[in-house]
Image (tube, rainbow, N blue to C red; front, side, top):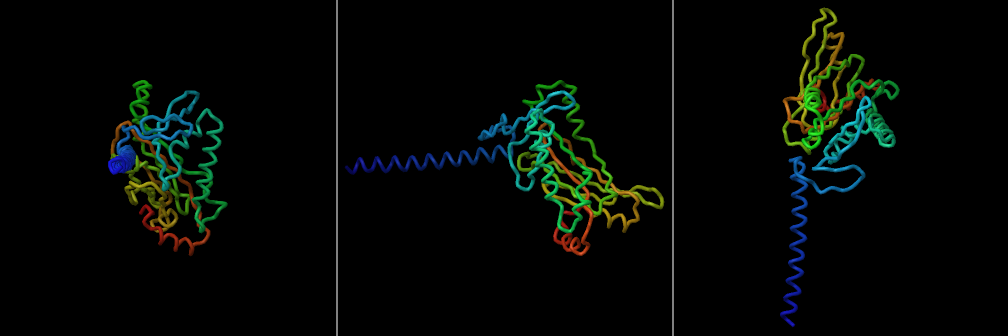
Amino acid sequence: MKKKLFVFVLLIVLCIMQTACSDDNKESSQEEAITNPSVERIISDNGEEKIDGYSIYSAEYQGEKYLLAVPDIYNESAPIGAEDYGKMASDNSGDSESATRKISEFGRSKIPAWADDNESGTGSILTWYKFAFPDFIMETYTDDFKQLVIEGLRVQNGKDISQSDVEYLYFNLYEDFYNNDNRLKIEVYGTYASTGEKEKYCEKYIDESGDYFIDSKRIMAEKGYSALEYTVAFDKDFDNEFAFCATGFKLIIENEEQYAAWKNENIQRFIE
């Protein structure tokens, strides 16, 4: 009897150990996938094809179909991703309408209490999403297309923000997925009303997804600029595995006192 009891207890202990090891392996696999996109992840099925840590989307541009591979990871600080813009171009009308609505609702939710609801968020100044494709996608395209993809990701995007009191910028860098230490370089340029001379006002490096702001109206008034613009560029070159998303629009101040207090609380998010 004692021998049977011992064997039974031993089996329970072994089962517990096996379960614990299994959980450790699962967590290890998920962590490794986040820092190394080439590792296959444990995938849950939500309708899209999933390969090697990516969700694969089919989209269409100027009548030509193509595939997008987007990191299969959700970042609470970056709820809008490049896949949402990809779905807007999808040949599936349901996906397109859903993505359009999601992006629109996201934009409206980002208008602060101090801003004029009727003037802010309209005429979006920046909508920018870019992809570089992992090998299993790139190999389906011609060499000319591959070169076009990589060159397109290096282009600086200059945007005029002279009509903004405050410029709102949102970036999704997928930093929880890619382990390449790449950053965005944001540069702000002003043009003097008196001479027409253009100068760099400031620059800031960004390596974290989230909301950022430029105090456009104050900068123009203090410096005597007649025009203000900014550029967005990657800090350094990268390989063909990358996805990135940005959006932005003007904010018009309705309550100056409320804005001043809010800015003081969020000063670390200002590009200056």
